[in-house]
Image 1 (cartoon, rainbow, N blue to C red):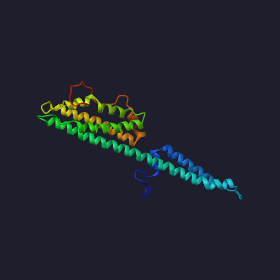
Image 2: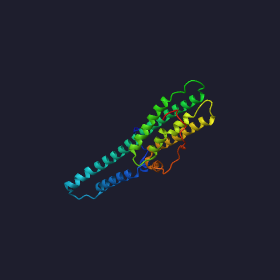
Image 3: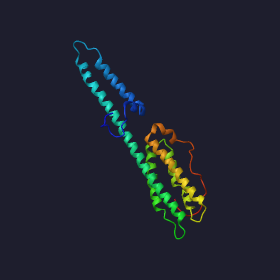
Image 4: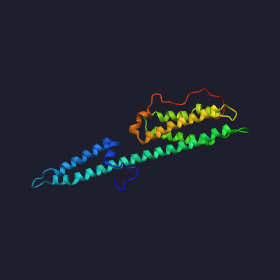
Length: 221
């Protein structure tokens, strides 16, 4: 691979073959067919059709190989952008959730810290998951994580955090956030490597947040 190759391009033909065997095989078959035509014995008086095929087939095969390679690069770039956007939303959500939990744990008097920034970060993260779910219709994990993020269980866990409450409540809320964001990261990895990770996006009963009864009004979902 030359130094001018686009970012994200496979380092070699072997890397391309490992990433997308079917496309690599089709391109190789086209090149082999073109090589067979150009190397075939020629008669002393080749006809116009043979001359035309000798010129056109190598050009067509080269164009096909270029198109297939460019398509793979474009798809890979789009997947990376989608995964990057998801991770960015995940980090923002993590910051806002941890800030809200810390604020509620430290608040001794007056109104509790507002959850507005946390809700806004949640909307962004949920939107990213919805986009991925729409792009991969067979994946159930993005939708499952989205529902857990919007569910009452997480809102109740954060609402339970008080400065005068058991310290386990804040630890439980943080653990719940970490567990959900770990699943978000798995979705991001699957977006980058859909063929390798697709089974992980269709779990029959993946690990999730423990369902708990609502603890009363507080941090509304």
